[in-house]
Image (cartoon, rainbow, N blue to C red; front, top):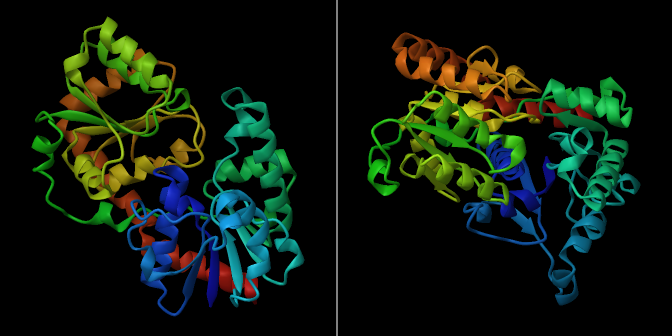
Length: 369
């Protein structure tokens, strides 16, 4: 089977959609050898997708197409699918190329979340309109829609009036690196880490709610080092202001664009991981933490209880005092730590790329039959 993929995010996105795209492509490549992954991307960036040469990759060739890369991706890919003998096409990040409904190539699309519909205040008006049109077209053109959580499935039905039977919930996979027992102690000196530290992974933005973590530590006088790993945004200024005002400079480390092997190592070294987001489509760092044997505190809202599956401590995002109490309890209670580690390991097995690949191939075959 020749499977075409919209692989833009695999090459160009460092987190969320990029991780999903890379994990999906690599899982299928590793665990379904009889199938070929054909990648379509407006730009090739080797730094994020180092093993891309193992795949057949198509990108703009003419000077004009290279200048108008987004036009190539949105309007030219569909016309190439028959020539490239693509049997099924998978849009990995909420959209499908325009005109695919006119081809004979069956398509499916993964919808990660509809946060732009639930929280429009986080987005510019023009961006919301673009996202809405893309998702609407993808849902109408796809033979099958993959939602990465029950929460996302409910939102697709609610906002786009899609028949429930057209949507399958398939939890995303976690990279194999998080299941491997790699050496990690050398990372302490590399990133200047203390013996005990707390880890928080995710783009620094209001929705991810990192300020609540800082307030929780300050309110409960917890002096454990906190390491934030994620892309900086304007929200970082708010975090920095709080840190300076409360003299927490020596307690905080910000990291970004670190190698995936290093991130897995940080999870393994951390005392606990915190992901206290207001809303998510899935919350991949929760499962990454569990796969690495790191106890997790996460939010009790949106899909995060579903993702955690009873293997994490749940807290209200806006209640930083309660969050601080739970952090202190978890840091001090060794039995609770071990219990969460055991439950987390069991939970993480469900997200191994081998099982994910098997589910996806079964889904592709079902569409083609």
